[in-house]
Amino acid sequence: MGLSKIKHVRAFTVRGGGADYADQPGPHWIDDHIASPMAKYEGYRQSRQKFGLGVLGTLIVEIEAENGVTGFAVTTGGEPAAWIVEKHLSRFLEGADPGHVEKIWDQMFLSTLHYGRKGLVLNTISVIDLALWDLIGKLRDEPVHELLGGAVRDEIQFYATGVRPDIAKDLGFIGGKLPLKHGPAEGEAGLAKNIAALADMRARVGDDFWLMLDCWMSLDLDYARRLSLKATELGLKWLEEAFPPDDYWSYRDLRAQAPPGMLVSTGEHEATRWGFRLLLEMECCDIIQPDVGWCGGLTELIKISALADARSVLCIPHGSSVYSYHFVVTRQNSPFAEFLMMAPEADRVQPMFAPQLLGEPVPQNGRMRVSALDKPGFGVELNADIKLSRPYEH
Image (cartoon, rainbow, N blue to C red):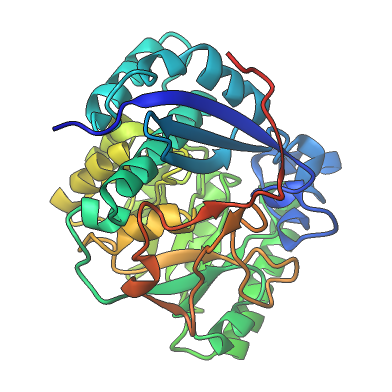
């Protein structure tokens, strides 16, 4: 017997505070001087907001069944993605059985091939897919991790991403990932500053705490080689997303030439099983890091993870809070998870999607019990006090 059919699909943007840090008022560590692809232009080096990081804003999709039960999810994409939801993809959802996630995903992907395949369109497909899984869980009165086959461990352990790994260590996290500050355009002086900052942090946290560097697509192969050679002396665990996502050849070469013991990771801005298949077949990395809100959703992440598992490559999803936690706890090749330190100074644990979500669990002493994820669906609710706009009601 099928589930209650889908009656309505609605796409909203957020007004006055969003899931993306760029929607939030005041300074934030993510917007400080951090290496990026645009950092070769000096005017866009000091602030990533200057070149438009976060300009799309937050997208929320609600899917309501005929019996009144509603599933929802949050990602980035803003008004352009809302248009795609309401004016194009809603036709494949309204009137359909929400449990038919494979068919719905396939129809959404194939119908957007001529203008999609990655980026904004995959963000849009991802959030619809997540909202479907949330709805299915609520209709069946089960958490998403049970729908995925059940937990393979009793708790999730986390590393923290932010500028204060020393504080993250005190908070119980297993490691800390620092944003790389200076890219190739800042020359040898910038490289020296990067190594000095890493050395300073290593002195603060000791030798047994993981340290990683997030390069956010900003390097060239020569710089990445030199950075990895200097950083290995400081016990760097991995070098993340060194190159633009389409430069598979540089990832392949970096992994082949990286110092013994140093891992290469990437995939935050990759999408679909085909993109990750290329990363894996070219032996580009030791860890893939798909974002479930961007790579194609949970339906696609299942396939991506299976590809990685077959090659003994870890699948550690990028951030994304409950949307990845429910997945990580069900997969043997996802032994830990990332927690994004959303506090402006990265000095305290704060829910990633505050204030949109109510009931969003956060790590306690760097860990999270599976029991924190036992509510139906993804286990969170939309904050009714958030100001939403539905710009393209169909």
